[in-house]
Amino acid sequence: LEAAFYPGHYLVFEPPTHWKLVTAIEEGRHILDFLFVDYGTMFRYMTLEEALIPVVQRMGGDQNFVSVEAVRQDPATRRYFVETLKKQVWAREDFETYFAGHYEHWHFDAAACRVRI
Image: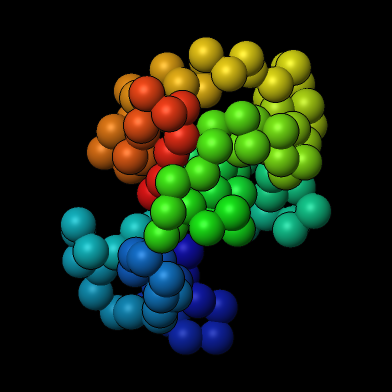
């Protein structure tokens, strides 16, 4: 995406949080494949992980374990399933399977049915 008022400059995303105008694109460092969307419609493009991380953080799950059932029952989680996925909220067992299977992002305590980031 070339900048309109700066010929030869490109708008790039540099993970995790930087937007820049650059003259040279560095593969592996700059991302050009992105989509701007209206904030009101952004939820349609969220992954489950992007939806659950703020829920777990708000419950203190970035420091301590939180109940999987509490995450499941949270209004934001329920809204994500109903409005984005157009499905009923998963059963607790499905959340357990998800957290156990995504161990690179989640610390899941199966014995106590709790999770943390």
